Image (cartoon, rainbow, N blue to C red):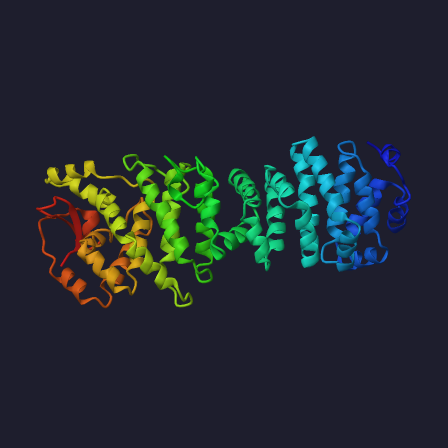
Length: 493
């Protein structure tokens, strides 16, 4: 559609004159492109603000019918976005001229008319306008929130595009940051569908910017709304038991696995900053226990996380979250209390049981099959396999973190015959990168300052050995316990 056809569609045309005058052009498309270029700089925005062009740009945006003027609407959005980038005069003018409502109406008409990728690009630019306006302060944030929450946020969150999801998360995060009442509103009955839409979209299309992580960090970790959000994606939802992890009758959903993966990444990146509450830690432990019951340990998956299998990914990411929670740090006042609560809840008992039931590390299995003791080698055929690459390492690393300067955890590991179990994992394992390093760390933590544990190690006796070049080269050898018929690994004298 050309300029003359577009102008004929406008109900009035007086507001065009300031735009033409500022651009020194008579063609509408050229005018918008010139003003967009000028508004990219601070000085350009200041000059255009002095000419009070934003009301004219808003009026043009409101007057252009969609989809006939698709290209012109996109240019108007870009101009509004640039004008509101850090320029308070324009941001205030946007608010005064009801730009929040005008933009909302245009975005709604675009969303209802088409689902094409090109229209997702227009919606992205429109959301970037809101994002720039939201940075102006509380008054602007409240206006945006009042107009878009919750219904528009929900519909915008459903658009299957990274380009819209990222700025939408920025808007919501900016509005809620420093406003605990809005956080509570977002995580209440009206707001949870907003988060559900955003997480579902992000799990399908991913994200490029960190706004989703900042938002989830605030509401899942700092504000501890994780149980409510996690339960949104249960296969069968009981609204009266919103925080009950056991409402999953049989399995976890892909969205739950994705949510855990993002939270795990956040915690790993901000391990010295975020202090996880005891209640949240125990909830994640319940998720982990449930995943242990659901996962089939008879099937070997040849990849690391994510595997694409929801229950296995939930198992792995919840395990990683627990590992980071139990990573003691002097900067986090209550971290030790959380680790104590997890150990008291049975975390070590579960981990040692899992590690005991797993088949031996690959290098030990190879040694056993090359030995004459075929009976001992055959005993491994009944063992559980690692459901993903790195599972054994993740268990050992969590045990090691639990044992760090925590005597009752060290004692529990000894009492459950876990010291020898950890020693046999001080090996290189191609399916578990850095297993040896984590196992050495774990043994070090188990022995530190614990006389009883040192005594157990010094009293270890050989029960028969199996030697192969790969193991001997590491200064180790495999032993077979005559009672349990299980392999164990010790240093060569």
